[in-house]
Amino acid sequence: MNNKLAINSTLVFEETYQIKGKRLPRLRKNEVEITLNIPTFDKNELPVAFIVKGLGINRPKTNFYLYNDKLYTLVLYKDRVCNTEGKYPVSKFIEEIKREANDDGWCISPYYDTLPVKDESVIRTKEKREKYIRERFETDYIIIDNGLYKVTGEPTYHISTFGMGGNHGGTGMFVDCEYNSNRPKRLYFNALQRKECLAAAKKIAKGRKDTDSVKGMGKYCNIQVLIPEAVKL
Image 1 (tube, rainbow, N blue to C red):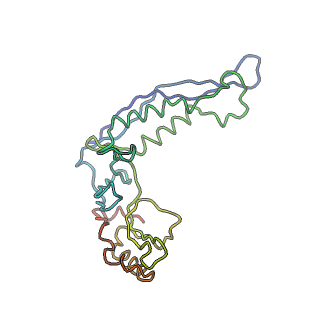
Image 2 (spheres, rainbow, N blue to C red):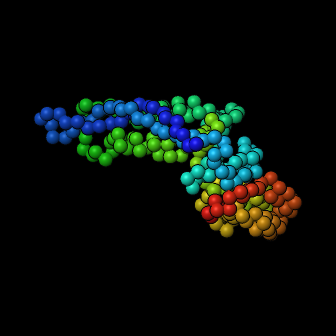
């Protein structure tokens, strides 16, 4: 059953107010209580769309859960803090939300109550601040079995080359969830195109005379597709 984890926090924002006898408004800080609702699930409530092998050194095997037509992967402690292990605690996530919502760094001005506000578009209003907080945390995260999961891109295969060829550097086949505009589109292949990617990678490696790269090509990465309809690219 889809429940919600309610997280209450103090939201700091800016607002204008009028001083009697002054034409332009002044600026001041204010705060309000808000509640964010993070969807929570048991492990078996959501389908796994992909199981990915080789998604970086910290993720030898990764489940991609499907919820509301979006993909989610587990947030590791290493994603947030260096030299840590295991899952990123939900308690730390709650602290993160409260810190961002109550961050005076957003709303520190030496000019409160003094200088007039000539351009109200730069004011960090309640609406702007709440929209930012909700889009950053409420929209992008879910909780599964007390593990924090963040929305991610669709896993794809891609080919990368290194060095000048002739086994100086090499050619590799990898899995990624983000599109790099510096890499040509022809070097990307969707999750159902493993064979095509492997053949293209070997062809490129041979063309560059990266003979050492050919033998183990594709050995350390794989995308197991459990829900073909989740492949959109």
